[in-house]
Image 1 (cartoon, rainbow, N blue to C red):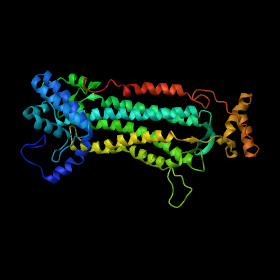
Image 2: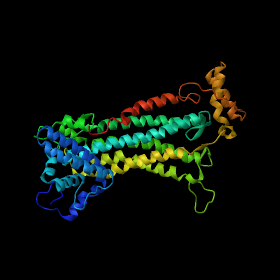
Image 3: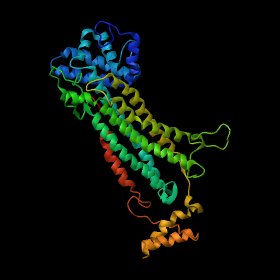
Length: 440
């Protein structure tokens, strides 16, 4: 028996098959549960329009449930000679049930089959990323509250500028993640549309009930136009890639800050010895290797949108085999981002923040703006106050008051932690709603 869904009585050259299949057998294992889920919805729909009998459904559904259980147990494999996950599932059904297993492909193409698998996969991956973002967000918010009143230098042009606080620093990255969740949510809505029923991209002469499969699979809506559904291959991945890159940008930036803050020239934060690495010849070294690796991974993840754009830029309308290569790019990326987010949360759980940093005389000039503002509040025109303090700096007579009195929204004394948390909770709600679970 041929194990290729497209078999027409001949076998391709082995070298050609290996080149075109590539890593699909390995990568498709991550799609297996979704392929079964899509097939279960599809055959229920086929029963509703009379293309399958109830007796056939009573055979097919338990068999598919058995395959789904083997997937969850980690026992499912794509056998040698089987091209992809779709072929393996159909091959198992046909081996167990005979001709009835051959009927599940009616009204369906591998094009919309892989599309629905990918939509379901990315929908779950985006929710998993959102969960990891939320864990890091909560850790940052806790640290922001804990270190609300610990002052640190703020920099512009990498020069000491104005007083800041660790509460502001931790809270800044927490709020930056809310912007990233906006992109995760946008990608989620793009992924959460049902392409099933578009077949090879031009629909079917069968009276398919696409609203039914949309409901069964928990999609928000169908991709209404069947050609648009086919065009969503690549567009969905690019949307997900943009969201992944945005989160990676925030985490990578934070990792860079922490590499600096750990440096003895700054010495703002420390981590336990066991969370750092050493040197083969310098016994004093405590290297920030975790943050450096994280920075590198996040920088690489930010290349995803460009890589996908180049891959798909000149493709004509309709399915093209180039699109298969997006799995090589995207599947490892979502896992790597979640790993970085969870590692960041773990590391920050063990951070120690130095006290009284601004007491060091090297930071005296950081208070100049505070003293200018103090004079203004006493009635001195701003330009005169600026000139007065500036002359003291030039004459080396400036003595800082070291008084901080910030009260406005989002400042050192009022970091708006509760408002930022409320914003994040509102954004995360569609991504963490447990009611979206798949088949009814």
